[in-house]
Amino acid sequence: MKGQLHRREFIASALAAASIPFLGAHLTGEPARPPLPKPLGFALVGLGNLSTNQLAPALQRTANCRLAGIVTGTPAKAAAWQRRYGLPDRSVYSYETMARLAENRDIDVVYVVTPNALHAEHTIAAVRAGKHVLCEKPMEVSVARCEAMIDAARTAGVQLAIGYRCQFEPYHLECVRLAREEVFGELRVIEASFGFPIGNPAQWRLVRALSGGGPLMDVGIYALQTARMLAGSEPLEVSAVQTNTDPAKFRDIEQSVTFTLAFPGGVAAHCSTSYAEGMNAFTAYAERGSFGMRPAYSYGGNRAWRSDGATLAFPPIDQFAAELDDFAECITSGRRTRVPGEEGLRDVRVMMAAYAAARTGTVVRLAGR
Ligand code: NDP
Image (cartoon, rainbow, N blue to C red):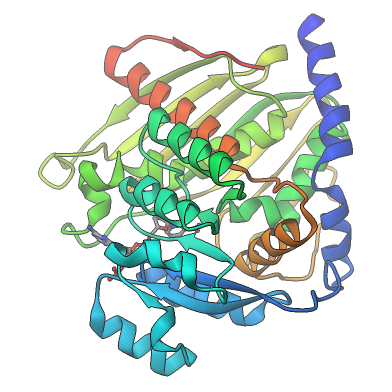
């Protein structure tokens, strides 16, 4: 009973504080907010797949952001991006010259899109240059590095956000509403999984020094986010099992992980992630029904369902554009982002505990909340 009260209190405060107004705006197909007088300038750090294929195009679709600079270690990319996006020489940086961002008034926000274990270095360089930072998930590869990023942003007096695009996705937000308003009664069990067969064996994702771990750090984090968002509280315990059917390819990181989280009030989450299997769905089981998404974590085309057959259909959105516009609005208005560094730290803390649980074969206790 005590645990249930705890969860209800959380539900009430979360509903009051969080994302539901945003959801309303996007359900109508209307822009979330009127355009700002001047769009904020974003610099992308690391011009790889995500920057090239998702973030630069998304920036063109925002109401309040524009691509204003790049940071890259590859001069040939710099030239191509300058031509394509009309960027002046003074807005092109290398990792070694990031301190000079301080002199560039066209750039308000730095978006860190490099391998996971470089996020702290690039975030701290950007906040010291006085820029707000949006950093891709996972925030970093250790709790200590996440804390250093949060401290650096606080000292610099800038906002730090993590690129949790699903926290701006209408179907995810509707499922959070179904859970928090207990539309099907109290939540009991969550099942969430995200994995894909990884290709190129030479990529940084398979090198622990750059990735911090395997699919858990990369895509298992989405299942963890779903569990925490739906439960509306922080896990008390985690247990985990790793498997590996290809030790030659996965010699430095895990191939697959299954982890179980115990939340206050008796909610359990069973999560799976893999670099061998395609998985992309979640189900939430409550007292009087269930709901979920399949696919759940794609850039577009996600679908949600309810066991009572009610239809869920929202206009498609660009998750990255929504995330970018929201951060621009936070900076302009002084509102705190809903995806702050502290949110990234919570996930890293649980993932480190899951690795410890798998390594030791024990249940690892967490602080909960
Ligand atoms: P890529 O490998 O495609 O790109 C990473 C880029 O980082 C490189 O192209 C390179 O850019 C730069 N870089 C700097 N140092 C290194 C290094 N030592 N090794 C390799 N690259 C380096 O990765 P992604 O774009 O797929 O992922 C980048 C980040 O974005 C990761 O943290 C990942 O987890 C996250 N991500 C998030 C997604 C989401 O849906 N939110 C989806 C995909 C990724 P340059 O040549 O310009 O220096």
